[in-house]
Amino acid sequence: MANHVTNCHHLKSNKKHQRIKSTFKMIIYIRGMKKIKYYLSGSFYGMLWMNAFIMLSQAGVCVAQSKDSLVIASIVKEATINSQLEKLSHELFDVIGPRLVGTPQMKKANDWAVAKYADWGIEAKNEKWGEWRGWERGMSHIDMVAPRVRTLEGTQLAWCPSTGQKAVVGELIIVADTPDSIAFEKWLPNVKGKLVLVSMNQPTGRPDYNWQEFATKESFDKMKADRIIQTEAWRRRLSKTGYTSKTLPLALEKAGAAGIVMCDWSAGFGVNKIFGAYTKKIPTVDIALEDYGLLYRLVEAGNNPKISVRTESKEQGVVPTFNTLAMIKGSEKPEEYVILSAHFDSWDGGSGATDNGTGTLTMMEAMRLLKKVYPNPKRTIIAGHWGSEEEGLNGSRAFVEDHPEIVKNIQVVFNQDNGTGRVVNIAGQGFLHAYDYLGRWLAAVPSNIRLQIETRFPGTPGGGGSDFASFIAAGAPAFSLSSTSWSYGNYTWHTNRDTYDKIVFDDVRSNVMLTAILAYMASEDPVKTSRDRSILPVDSRTGKPALWPQQRSPIRKGGLD
Ligand SMILES: [Zn+2]
Image (tube, rainbow, N blue to C red; front, side, top):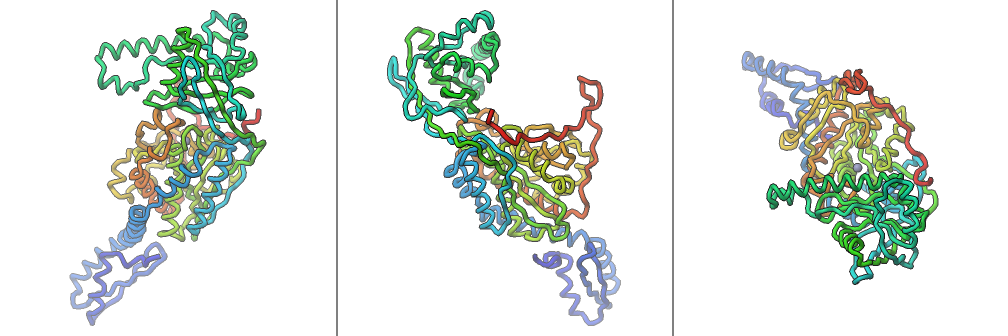
């Protein structure tokens, strides 16, 4: 570490004073750690006394600022001129790919991160917390084969049963609009040997912002009104089957359907959400809105379209699941912890680039910078790359449950998990004194980053949404570094378009600097953070103050029902 004193403007003038013969010496103790000598000239006694007073009053601040500003300047410099984000993104998103729990890609990513940390001289390990259904995605190939041939844009859902190398070929049928569940049961045998269309045919493939820009107001209003009626009618149609979105595919499978075809349109151009299949034997595929609409209209018009579906995948039994944990050991208070948190897993329709690849790389890159410019932190700094957040915060809940000794000594947790954007919001999550310590730490952040961020105190404790909630439930001060949207909800969150090209690297770099600086300030803070809770606002349902979220156990064995 650089000497505390070297960068301090006020102390640089000391040299001048040392040359003067008649001197007296003052020793100032700062933070009980360093003593700094001021040599003051007797011949300039009066003036220098005044200077001495100024120096005395400013010395503590000055040295603190000088050390902080040196570290912070080094963080900014390294993050800017030697950023590893593009390289890491390529390795993780393009080469390894999405990180669905229980897949070999998730394990590869765990191992990749440990190796990266080792390259940077940071201790890291994969810690097992549970088991999951082992499954590996293979190819998806979907073609319309009648009344003409067209290769369709679509993919199998996660955990889709394999068709093997032989395609399933069949006619299509739309889930019937029956008066009630009894009538639906009577209709069910009609699906035998057919692929069933289970999603509504959207009235438009254009997102609303496109209508807003180009449609007449009357036309836009009419489309929206029609869509509301149609959406409600489709909801009623499904509800009258007597099944839920989870049980309907199984009922169709049991009735002899050859496959399930859906379209989980995400209200943007070319974008669908890709979640998990519920079928046990027959394929479940999601098709792009354009192709789904084509099939739907052909069926409705009696053109008898046929499709061919081939979905390959490998079942791999029960596999262990891990959190990847990296650590820079504290030198003064090793039993107190600053935790940089981001879930490592993803859905697998895209590459998991912004959910939560960018959060993951923010924490990794921040760790790399900290190791380089702040290798002996006061408190221990841990990066937690959690598994299976997407199925219910499982990795972080397991960590909280398995490490009470760490959780009770947490200085702070910073979690980032809502896309590639610059951090623009930090809320106090119901911790009464969060404004105090977060405010002080944020004050050290360069203004171009800090001034983008709105804070809200004391806020209310997050009960879910991402891994900070697992820590809040255990009473540990945990905060979400909340990003600007970049159309996250529609375009990248759990979609087939969550890919490398959506990353806004300058924003992620800004988040890396912010995270590293906050981690540094939290680690250096002479004071342990308060866990005092604010009285929560009255819950309108109960008429009483809302309750603090309860700690919950993770699913330790998943996907095996
Ligand atoms: Zn996420």
